[in-house]
Amino acid sequence: MTTAQLLLIYMGVFVAVMMVPAVIFPTKVRKIMMEFVGDTKIMRVMGMISMMIGFLFLSVHYKFTEGWLMTISILGWMSVIKGVGLMWCPEMAIKLYKKYYNSDKFFIAAGILMGLLCIGLICIAIYPLAPTIVYFY
Image 1 (cartoon, one colour):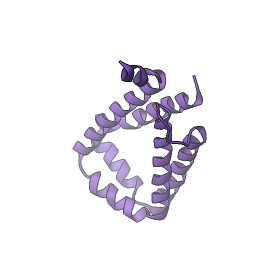
Image 2 (tube, helix red, strand yellow; image 1 turned 30 degrees about the vertical axis):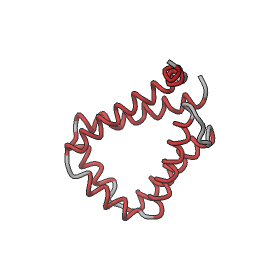
Image 3 (cartoon, one colour; image 1 turned 180 degrees about the vertical axis):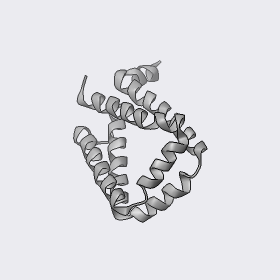
Image 4 (cartoon, rainbow, N blue to C red; image 1 turned 135 degrees about the horizontal axis):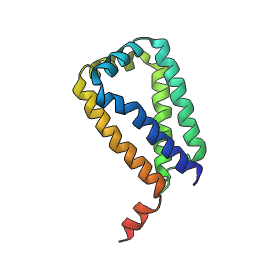
């Protein structure tokens, strides 16, 4: 198993662990998130962590090439852009969080969507040639 595959599995499991409580206990998680995103200093630290994760992904594969490795590049660049946005404009991120995190239905829908994304990431990591094989049939 390559480093890229391990990163995809790690990302899938990490997001799943973070989003399962959002589906089961949406009210509790919403309250915790609203307390967490209320401070610009915390948002800037989240931006730095997001940039570090993005650069970790980009150190493995940074080019937009064909195949499953492009997933690593997309996740890396998205994480870097998110990190820069959180570091430069934490107030805008706080406004967006408060706008969208105000209902339990949003957390349930986001949790289900992220769960499907996690399953997809893990499947891409475990079966990296599956999309290529399906494409030729």
